[in-house]
Image (cartoon, rainbow, N blue to C red; front, side):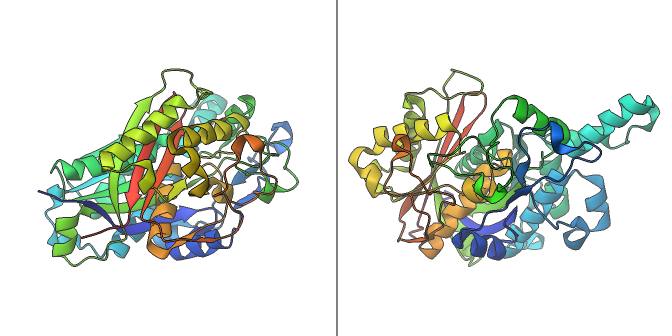
Length: 418
């Protein structure tokens, strides 16, 4: 029997830091990684309603990857490779000592290789030279390109696939990785969430959807403000998060440091609307209940919520309703925060990055602030929200992630007990 499923390694590329140490220091300080998009060369920004995003600044793939890896993959896969590399190093896992067929890779990605995709399609239509399309165009833009390249980089020959459910992609990847190990199909799963879609077309699409914040173009660091009364839409972000999951038996055998346990998971569909959640919050509440039941826990056992909290008017209010349905009066005793307030909405990477913040909260006893939580919205009134660091011993937490397509995920992460 594989026993419990535990987290032994973390890695991250984010708008507030590349590397877990840099990310966590900035997160605890409440720093915002949201900045102004100066241009989409050659497009000026004048035609875009929103002009801010959580951008990974100063990322040079050559600093972290060999030249072949850096050149042959899209930006989102570069992020995935860097995050996975750090997570594996952090875990102390030595692939040379592992059965490669017992090490899997499961990636969550929302958009895939959009940087190359947009560039190549633009050049094709401008120059009408189909014979000049990049020879690696197809393998680079496919959604499973990151899972493939991560496996190749580390010789992982176990289960390998990509989950794409928009904003809940990497939360599902975490849950799927947990199940893969519990079912005995792998000893270790390198679990990654990655997206890099701050591109002219994708950004224009979200602007046309009127989903993005537009009021804070002159104050970008104030734009992502989950649960705040003055929120006006989400802020796009980019990045990657990686978590090494393995069976507790395997981890203890190699004397690995254990951060936390991934204990429960639920996946549901509201079957309601492609973009808007059901306003009564019932399906989100059901998802949280199912995840806790899978972990053998009740609402009384949960101390902390890493909320989906995108900073949209409807979404944050609906999640609050769902939390109150599940936790009732205990909802005001929970510590709650929103990682997207710091990095923006990283789409397919959001669940993994939120998962890392959750694991670190359990491991360190510190819950990072919710940035820009200045004027509490009565529709989102939760006493556990704070613009300051909360010191709390977290025994069990819920990670929420809800995606376009009426898709919900919830993951229970708790303190590891041998």
